[in-house]
Length: 265
Picture (cartoon, rainbow, N blue to C red):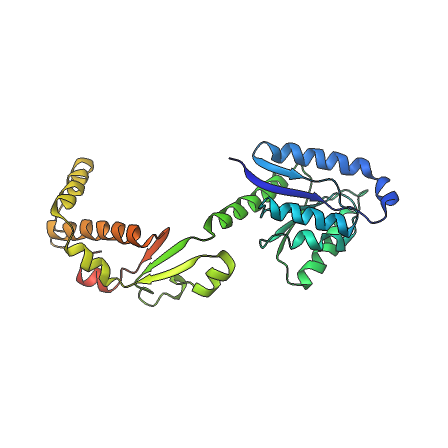
């Protein structure tokens, strides 16, 4: 299934002025459609010329559950018409304009972006030629990030243990993740890994040991022993069981120092 993307073209309340450069709008819009339609499920609207039209398009975006919104500004458009569209999604919106000297696109984009940013709406600005690979890459990067964020929503993160040896960059703010990404952060003590590891059925352990033996020639020494390998396998299986039981979508495990020093790396 293709990822849904809404492309809304910003119009001008002065329709007669807008019509003078409608050819640019049609060419830029058709080009954008060709670039995106093969990879994505596009909702491509007609230009919005009034606040009522903008609100109607915003409702369509919400009803269709589209969280990736591109505001296309091929020529001068009335900046405030973008407001309902910008707030039709919790994600940042992409403002897309061009550098043509005959379009006034840049001026409209800057005015629109400035208004939204002053109000605290996150957005991405892309100004460039649609034939330019860099411009196409910026557009698609925005779409892919939105897709990633949507995929993270309502997921569960399992933090096994906590911060490792004082490294502050290895931890996250659960409230921020919940606010920005809608991810629930649940914490389990790393002792649970040890407790579960010790009661893993020996047959499960042997199955993984045989699998490893078939892949690599294991070289044991004073540090890496057969007993430490067994603890590592047991820890791995314990983690799998914790993830399954608690329904975690992704996890982080604190290794150093407690587990690494006293049980298994």
